[in-house]
Length: 400
Image 1 (cartoon, rainbow, N blue to C red):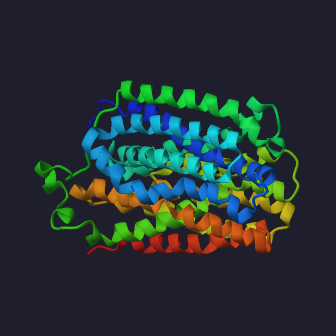
Image 2 (image 1 turned 90 degrees about the horizontal axis):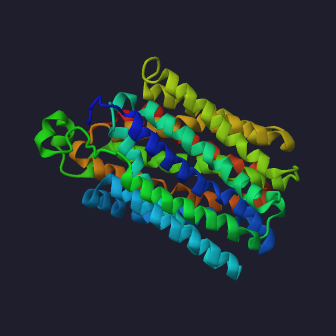
Image 3 (image 1 turned 45 degrees about the horizontal axis):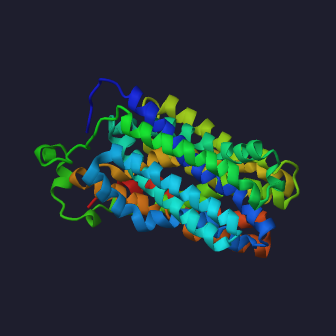
């Protein structure tokens, strides 16, 4: 592991900007869902395919992204990702011009491809930039940058267009998406110029293999059960977290709450509170596994409250659910990547592929919403968090 003390602050500052871009690109989906439902007459289950299409590339391109990093390094892969984002939002403009749901799905897929490459580079980079036992603290800092960007996206659209998200039409999307293209291209240039050192995990080089004896005796990535169980946990986590963050505008719209874009802050605020706790308490007062356990219990309680409270009040319980989600990503990633050694890049590619959870979970949520209402659809979160509770108690300890 790279333990150079010349300072993590500058690289983390640049990578934090990239995490903000990731959250912004995903947050765009939140207002798009009700816009497409209204303008194109798309039903809930079908409209949530927009979000699913954003996450499908994680499954398809997790391994190619890892190979790209191996070939050209973390820094150039980050820059490539922003160029791909520019192309994706150009595709969104074309889809808006054609008023075609199929083209919106393609644009979302392209945006997800860019996101997969960027996530594949920034997440392991932050994990191995410093000591593994404090990785959750660094990822928590990045998480604040990421989650605050989710509600900024619908507010940005509303500000540039000059309308509430409930009144936005497809034709209104041209100008804000053009601005996004320019910003993302600039971020790509900044990525190339940023002082980001290339880093390697402990035991990743043959010369340092003795630093990770557990991995040194393995011949395949499939011989790490704690990683494989962690991939399942990450699959459920990303699906449930996406529900908490990307459905708030649609939730508010479903119950005729005024200015639905304002409710987009509920989930991110809950997560940021959790991230701040992670920065303060990990690793000095809390181990990463303990933080994951606490958050899993909170998320289970939040899932129950969302469906148990009166409908108009239940949207606020999503903040508790999101609070539970907050330290799951920061804790899951280092727990699953522990002791991978020379398999670090292969392991991170599996974790990136596991982020495809919303491909299954979001359309299922839409189907449940159509059949039983948005509030009842949140029952879907409960089994996801129960599995993560298992991983926090026993799963991460499994070694072969």
